[in-house]
Length: 285
Image 1 (cartoon, rainbow, N blue to C red):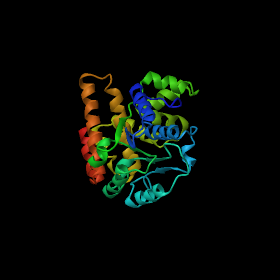
Image 2: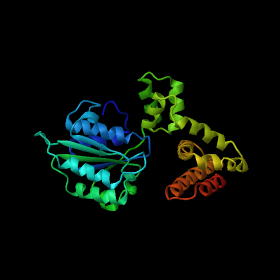
Image 3: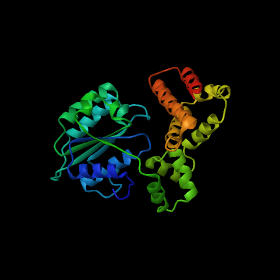
Image 4: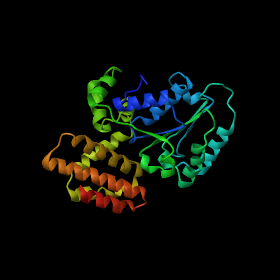
């Protein structure tokens, strides 16, 4: 794990798991927290592979949402077929499966995966990543180990990326956008055209407008789902950062923004009409 920057508690929990692995683990944290990179590193250490080799290893499989949306039951059935194949090795841990964004699994897919979690093939470790442990069925949660991925300290993040020779001003800008999420910070530093950059500009623009002026942006965001979701995410990160030091009326404003972004995201995920959800959002902040 030396190539990753982890919170001290997260590092301790990951090390403990690698030393004494159970059959299944859920790594939970917000998008950009680096949980998928952690899962890859855990898999490589368990299989005795060099860093970055898991993706090309014949007896490892990464299952992720189709088209970035959901993981359906057919994908889980294909995984079951993969797990039914024999592995020609005598090492204790023979195979690793990563289910990325496991919270996007349909109920049918989760129930199908539950059978594998309950009775995994010998020598197989399942590593799931999820935005929240609560997004998984209780039957799955009760049968897996859980590690919540915590954010490293700002000073540690700054020092970590400076060692990689990124300019200080670029690091500060990336941290202000990511809210201290190491995976997202790294992505922003490596991609000058990262899709969250337009969302950051939109978030800052919205905060400087009056309520009436914000309402004029409803159509734009309702028609651009990606920009809408990214802008809500950036506003949430801005609120989380600001609440670390804010007080009084400023803190109350950021608390309102934080609550509104959470409620709006939940409403949109639940199928709410985008224009109505955004109207309520702008009236709340």
